Image 1: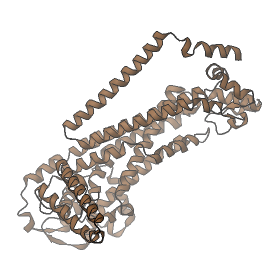
Image 2: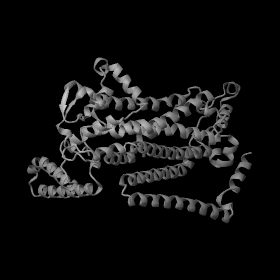
Image 3: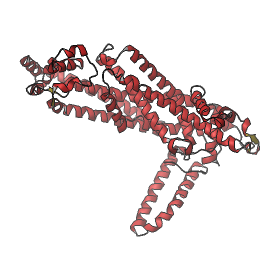
Length: 499
């Protein structure tokens, strides 16, 4: 059988393959690759033409991920021979299997038990002989087996590719649905732009009669923290952001960061900031790859690992939505406890203290992880479905499959229509504003000015005046704010940019 396997491997080698087949396959691969590259290129030109720099940078991030996939593919191909020449004892392969057959394995010797396990995983000995040839025989002469087969490497390669593509697709889908939800608030912004604010500053507002206070401060927040959190948990499922919420947070942001510009387009700024965050979410960070490796390790028969981990992003998503709603509640409680009546409109005080560990960015990291983990669940399901079939033991039982798919759909819808819009507006209630508060040309002007300032500082340091530069930093920052104000047509009062 070994001889037959050797002849089969030799007859299918590249040197015995017709040249027209090789040329046709190469041509097809090149055409598909160039078509995909051109599509991405024209999509980038479209984003540039519409002055959507954040989406263009997100597209560049997608290209980086594709390049990483190409490197992984190259690495797996180059290391294929070395992996197959790495031999391990057959007894090692009967532990921590995704599929297990206790009855048959009990009747087999350790070497035969490996044959059964390998067959379940698609590592059948006959196929190994046909595909691996001398490398498999190298291990068999030692009474051992290869670390990983050619077929297993190929399937692993496909899974990594499907995972990355699924993550990008789910992120884009979430962004599109979330942005559509946020654009529904545009008519609120248009109303504020039309209304005159000159007389509004002179009126007296009774705090406890305001709709914003009535919605979030009904006594339960002050008397019971548990009821306050429970109210925040429930509210994320219906009317997560109301008109009074948008009105109050918009005014709080403007009065804190751009007091002299009451006509500031808060809605446009919020969308620009969300697009800038999207380029961070669409990538796959190193800690996410660690997550993939850990859970592939724990995919052991009988543990139902992928069933249990499907609830992790759901729980995190509910926690994030509850926290964002509770930030709004805290803003209402803070004002209601300090004032009974105020002159002018109700104004909340943005602060990082309302967020976990005083860092609003933590919410973005959690959303990134939630979207990736959900994409991982769906990608793994379709990979198993297309590779092994629905009835495969790796797929697990139907009672464990259906809840995973239902949870995945719930996560996608809840994140798109509730959590992401909440994140877009509530994270603006931090201490600092983002650089997207300025238009693109203003940002470029500020960056150019900052680079010139660094060069002047470096020249002063070289001339021995480094001791005086430390005291000039506050004034430089003030000058930066003045230049930004001049470019924007108004001044920026309050706190500086976080970036």
